[in-house]
Every structure is written in C-alpha cells, then in structure tokens.
Length: 288
Image (tube, rainbow, N blue to C red; front, side, top):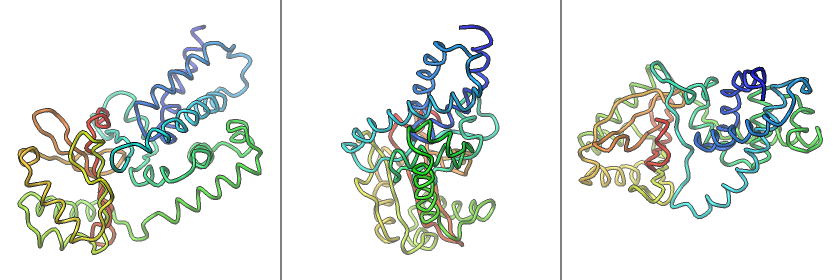
C-alpha cells in the first residue's frame, strides 16, 4: 500500500461512511463496512482505477448491501420498533460522525429508507444522493441500467409519498417543540394534547434495554397517556434535557447520571406535532 493510495482512500473516507450510513442506518456498521472497503482497496493498484470515487462507492455499497441483508434478518427478532442510529452534528462536534451528515440526512428520511427493499435503498442512495449515473449504479449493484432506473423510480416515489406535506422548520418548529417539552416536564395533559396533532404517531426504540412501546402508538390521547406513564417512572423522573443538533435537525436529548438516555425527534406540520421518534436503546446512542 503506497502513501498515494492511502491518501486517496482517506480523502474519500467521509463520503464512504456517509453512503454506508444511509444504506445501513447505523453509524457503527457504516464504519465497519468502510474498514472492509479499505482492506479491499489495499489490494488494488490505484493507477489501474480510472475513477477512484466511483470505484470506492461501488465497493462500499456492495459491502453495505450484503451487510444490510444480514441485518434485516436480525432485525426481524428485534424487541419493538427498530429506528436508525442518530448522529450528532452541528458546531463543536468533532470527528467523522458529523461529516457523515454533510448533506443532512434527517431521521425522518432514514426512517422512510428503512421501508425500502435493500436494492431500492442502495439504488436511491447512490443515484439520488451521490449522483452516480444509472450505468455506474448498475455496475455497483450488478443490475442492468433499466432495472436500476426502475429501482430508483420506485424508491423516489415511495420517499415522496411518505414525506409530510406541511412541515415547518426553524423558529416555528422550535416553538412547537418548546411547548411540548414544557408540558411534558410538568405532566400537563391538556398542554400536551394542545400541541399534538389528533392523529400523531409515537415510535419508540428501546431495543429491550430501556422502557419503550412495543408498537407505534397512534392518536394524541393514547400518546399522552403513554408519555405521562413513562415520565412518572423513577428512572425517568430525574433526567435532564437539552436541545442539540442531531442528524442535521433539532433534537431533544435526555440525559442522566449514566449519560445519554434518549434522543427525541419531532415532525411538526403547521403548529402541531404529527410524529415523535424516540431512540432509547443505549447501543444506538454512542454517536450522540
């Protein structure tokens, strides 16, 4: 392995971790896949490669796709809903984790990607996010260009159909989340009902390690009842919270004596919260 080969790979490392993260949904697995890609890269002559970026994305995406197929089988026995692993971003965040989200892959988008087939997901990430041509994606996925175009079309249509229509961001989003946090902190039932959409959905991921609902909870009344029950638990009552940028968006991070306890993401449409995602599995909070 020459110094030039090492330099080429390191120049693309963050890009590769970003691609693998979008395909897999976990930062730890993405890092493992990129390490495997490095081993493959170390066996080739860089001068024989016309386009290092396309070559490395191809190798990484193939490795990620293989790992995703294995992970899908394991996730079928996962305790409760499976949510992607959040990654801290924003000012003051060091290392490669923040760079993974250079193009801001939101938690909501990652959750939508989870509903795609492995091939659709990989094709969408390579084609739509990283701008590879149909022929390049076809080579990476061992499919014909026509098949790749169909995969990307299906994936794009699915992603667009799952996107909320009237999402608000910035100060308005923060103001609505502030109202939710203020009501939750004091156990204000009416305050919570006033900030939640009547058809709100709450999805919690505890992985069997921390208290979480085993299925998504729908409607404001049921969500509030569940939240107030959890907030009354002794292990939760002593937690503090703060606002951080995670996955390029505002998140509420709850912490206790043992570190990060949970990360909450909110989808706000107009002036109501329509979706709440809470990641509590401690194995998924290391990048926060």
